[in-house]
Image (cartoon, rainbow, N blue to C red):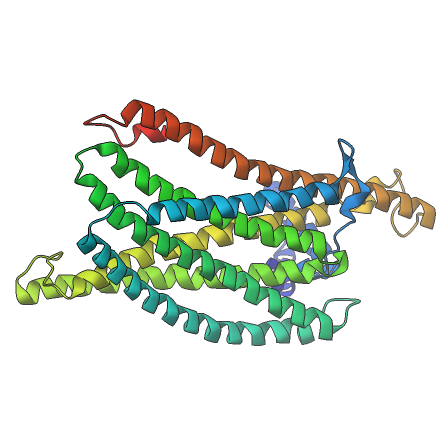
Length: 396
């Protein structure tokens, strides 16, 4: 997505060259950045990136494509893990009045998210117009039909936005479950459940978020032809960034408005801010969920995704055939056979790095689940029957 600014940045570089910056540090930094931008511009940006064949490199006798196919199974494991904890939280004991309040808060959150969804679609229409103008007229993807690349970018921008939106909805559902269950558990007088239930909720949301994101990226890597993976990734990054930005900013604004409204009711009617008679209480609780659940969840989904897209882009742009040519030769002077050999060597390194990155992400998913169970078992054995505890201790 950053290559949208390539042309403007090129003009900026010409301007800075005109000013003749002579300091070595600044000059070196600008030279390096200019080279990267120029290479991205020549290659057509992220939308024109071509993924190498992942099956050309083997790891322990398994080719890269098959190895990442196993990753899909672990993503499904993460989804099931999140849903199991969700079901467990839902089935925890809770007083009817507490459940009714949490459901009222959730219903208000649903209204908020539905309104946000409509706003996101309107915002997407505006962004879609920009995408069409940019990739259809200003900077079409070289060597590919506009009739193919534009629909792909637009489709995956919707998929990315839907990903941010869906995990945000899941997060707010889990959190409203956990809030009432935690409050009811507090009546037992033991501190451990008050600590453990929110951790379960956070783990459920986190595993669901990472699994959905990783699954989407693996599908692009494994099942989309390499020539069209670039448009898929750029569209996906645009969509999830759009969804996260709107949900993050709007959630913060909503919670402030609700908080101020509740304060005003407190002043006007001379009642406490959290008094049941204050009509702003539910709106305030909804605002807290919008600001502290919806926004961060969508933001986390976007951050995990765009960093992956950035790493893929960096690998494909940085590991180029020209680095594997014999000393003294360039792509213009080398023979076709030498260029083919250099291209094969570059593709091998690209595949090794791409597979390594996503294998690490899969391992992190498994390590998170394992660490959760180990830490939870230790904490339960140590604090399960304690009358007092430091709530930060199980986290460290």
